[in-house]
Length: 101
Image (cartoon, rainbow, N blue to C red; front, side, top):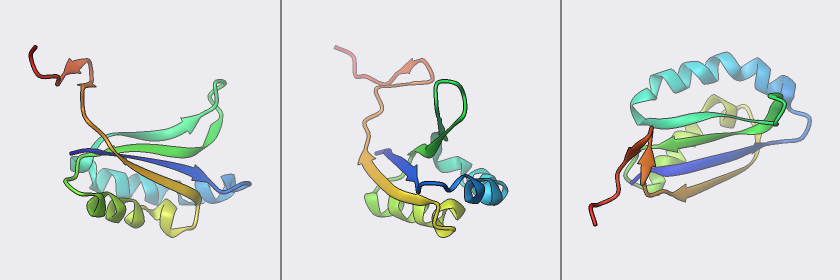
């Protein structure tokens, strides 16, 4: 069962986000088999929104917790808050996963 992970950056942490971005992207690439979706949260004007959003395809909350704990952004202390929520895949990439009715 997939899990959504939403993060919020600590205030005034844009420099930390930028300085750890390359290693964070390397981490995401190494974990691509677990990622259904992920990306930075943005303001409407496209500027940084101060957080990230991930949907990871793992079986347990513990695996989702381990995933985000291993993220270089977490290890660098970027996030002030992290929320993990179990997610039911109904539609993804324009495909329905709903059971027939």
